[in-house]
Image (cartoon, rainbow, N blue to C red; front, side, top):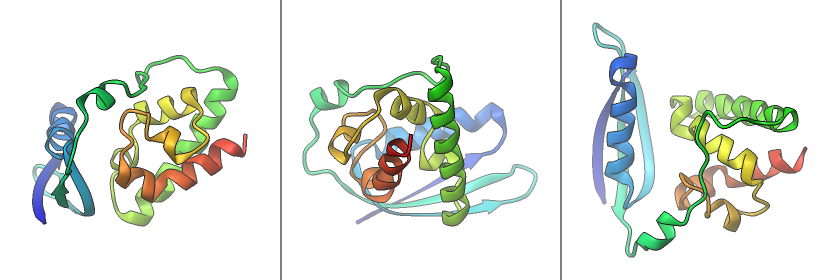
Length: 149
């Protein structure tokens, strides 16, 4: 098992790039566990430790075929209601797990869920940002929220 450590600086100057570095680093990894701790100080940051293993096989074609929407995609009134419910769920999860909300699901991932309206874990797998780890840990909750509308 591999252990990877990252810092996510809270400053908007660094935040997006720090998240990108993490996502690119674990793209071909099977995440087993994540630990995080907020580090206060002159440069406030989240320290993230990721326990992972290399994925056995990765299909480039399947990654390229995944559905995604940008975070500034316009939503209908009904979709905005679903998006708000998913954001509330994400906040609850982040509080419970001690992780920043974007580590649960980014806004773009939630918007993709709202637009694609997956009905199963298999359909969630077809969305960008949703792999085995995220689906195992959050898939049922997401489908349940979608089905409640």
